Image (cartoon, rainbow, N blue to C red):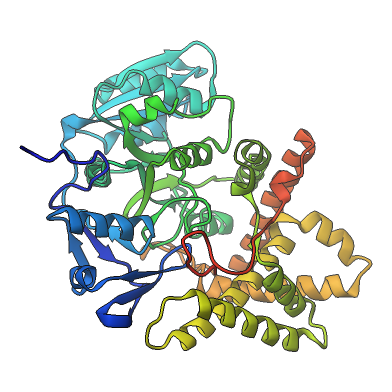
Length: 489
């Protein structure tokens, strides 16, 4: 008699690799304690499970290895090894478009070999768009009224007859083989959606400085580290510019929220995660997104992104919080930015208290005290970084007004600029292609400030329009551990 296999069980042959940012520590009685991931956490593995992870890769061969691999994935301590994708006949690409025939032609040219549905979202010249689709052998759906990107994608989704679907915007170029490989994430039965690194692409012969900045620091490029996507993780959402998904799951979820003209991709990701599904980010695979060729278009898009925060807050509450801080680290980080006489002493006391709390929460392993101190210091740095972003990006209209009358506020904003510069030089380094034009430090600094100003303006305008400040709120977390008994960062 065969034993039934759980529907969420990873299939035999599926492999996961421990992330490079995870430290393996010698635990009690032959166990190993893994510390790292995003959000930061610790996991103790018994000796039997330890043997599975010693080589850094766990291949699923039985129930034990399947359980360990699933735990590692869900804790963001390991990433899948993409060994195989899907076959071309298993996936259909949906391309929403409104006019832009030249970009559509470029998009469809590299998708040869897989089925494509072009959804015309009430173009002014639908005949030209239809001609481009026909030239590339793509199916064509014409919408009589403009529904917006979410509605156009849903219209295409309803026409899909394959188990997998890809969504590719008309101003994006991504090769068919990239989508087939990316869909390999869907071999995990719980994964509903996966996305690649979306790089900015300059099409101008002589690109302006802001085009070069947007290409290197696009809001759609979410870093170079693979991640399980969820609120609070290093990657909390995926852009709908390029995605692959499981058709049946997306249909069951109702697809994209058609009433949302911006932020519909964030909403879909968070709904799927809340429903127990998994979403993956895979930066080893890339798509290219055309940057805006005017400064008004570039900054206007940033304003639009920010304006979606209020609608997301109504739907998802604290998931959209602009910062997550414990009271202790919030006070210590603020003190450092304000540069008061007591700031360093306060930071030292807060870090010491946090180290003591983290030490108690961590499982026993060699070097636990030193690890706790390092994690506490990291927490202080993260608090200062978040509060700097609040002053320069999310709360800048209020901070700017306060700075006109308060020397302390002016010092805090100046400190925030320094922190942001350090972050730009270390953590948020531009994802520049080898063949792309170089950016000067002044261009990076100006680009970051304009990006922050535009996004913050959109965030506040959306909040005022909906008469809700929830999109500007921070989430205060308790000091200690999360519900899995692991230390908070």
